[in-house]
Length: 111
Image: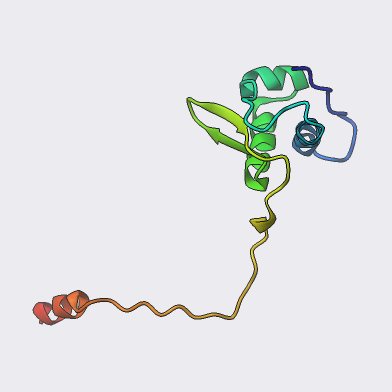
């Protein structure tokens, strides 16, 4: 798998450039859903970036829903489209939690 390199003098952060290159390959079906990506160390060499930059790019793609990563197993493509539920909404809702009498019984036993 061959990756183009990011532009170092561009104002866009390197990790975003790297993530964009990977997304483009996924959307163009050069990397298939279900395919395992090379190790972060191998990809960082291909992109000519630091391991921290590579880890941040992978992490951002995991958050967006393109990739799934698990230590000792690797990083896999799980979707060719970003997850739509990545944006959290603020709602005016209240949750009510009702507990059995165990807490009250414990309090009563203390006194």
